[in-house]
Length: 195
Image (cartoon, rainbow, N blue to C red):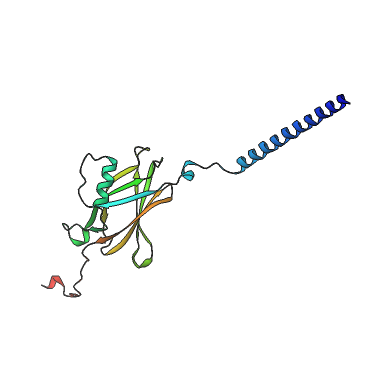
């Protein structure tokens, strides 16, 4: 009797082992199927890229560290860009320094800065500025910008949108301050040759 009970226990143990092996195999197969169907998240998806943009018209000191540069432009940021006053009104421009600080390296060869006119609650595309990246591990970029007439107009609210791989990473709203082109309202129909 003892032999039968021992052999019965052994057969039950073997059945349990086969059940455990079958369950383990099924779980492994199910996990393989799940990972085959669900795409792995890419680094860009796992942690999205965010950017902070700053505009300043102040002269930026040389030899600043990345942290010092960001601290400087935060303290001297321009919410409204003032137009240059040298050339005639139709040829004037707005110049500034743009600092873009990403939360991590963008790991791409370029990023775009898109300008929109957001006057009257509508978003009208104005210009695209492509910035080529030399060091893919860099996180902060400093660039001089010049916004020229007639694409950019004075007394307008603007939005700057930073995109990486066609995904919006950050934005900044600012206004353009400048002199509008004045028209006299008088029309002269005399022929200059008659005089």
